[in-house]
Length: 340
Ligand code: KG4
Ligand code: ZN
Figure 1 (cartoon, protein in one colour):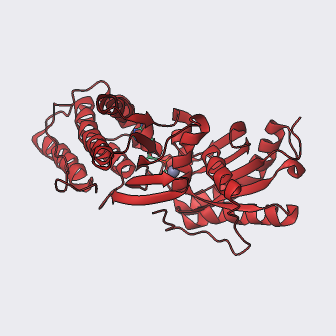
Figure 2 (cartoon, rainbow, N blue to C red):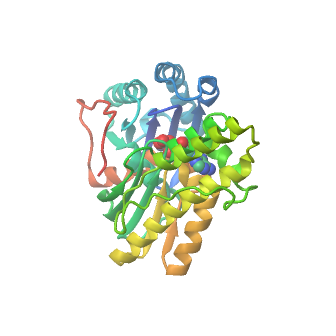
Figure 3 (cartoon, helix red, strand yellow):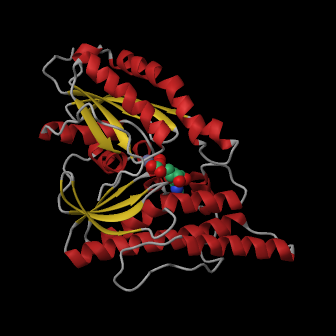
């Protein structure tokens, strides 16, 4: 039985299209991790519809909080703090989580922890890897963000580069859509690419200058769209697996080389990946290969913690809890919240 003196954090995540609740004890024991995905509802529109997302979160959130307590065999009085994602994300969706958790924390007289969603993705790594060495280079690759950061300690970020246009997950989803795959296209394209030839279609790599740590994926996306249009005009059949593999090779090569170059140039020995696209099979494989060649230690989360979940929010909240960094009652949703 868990005692009152144990640190037990419940976290709620509603920034996009997953309603998620998790309970984490002592920053390491995940007592429950519930993710209720709305993907099926949004699939028919080809992407997330913000208004529907908010409504679905509202329908789900209270029931999931009760279910989480039931699964963890706890009651509210045994919790030490409540955590919530307050940005970045869809404003209406974020507001559901923020208002629910604020109301609960106020009525239960529990401390409130406000978590940045991107920081949550980064901290998904600490759910399973307890001894990650600082400083480290972090590659953040999600549906809304693509960035390379240097992390010097818990909660300390220095931005090295970021995307100038599309986020990498967004590029995956847009290319997948153009190829007739359903939403979200990233995992489907990944699977398709495994059967294709990555050298079949010549596609550009956006290096953006010798020393740049920035990224750009819109040129690559346009090149794929042009390839599809030309094939359709000429009545030629596109080998989907080859196109997927060629697109993926271009994305992965740039992500891996810039990350490894940043680590080498800064003399940093640890590399960490975070966000939905870190679930990508080729990115994991190639990054592992290159880090191995360069003597770098690589961390990435298990698949279940790569995409949106509340366990990662609870884990990030744990480190804020240790530092006593609590939010106050003026906490609000911040759709464009920045981390670095
Ligand atoms: O981190 P995430 O769950 O949500 C955001 O915070 O954006 O990332 C979702 C993104 C989607 O664009 C999805 O297509 C992509 O991650 N994704 C993948 C894979 N799994 C998810 N992209 C490429 N390969 C995958 N295996
Ligand atoms: Zn996310």
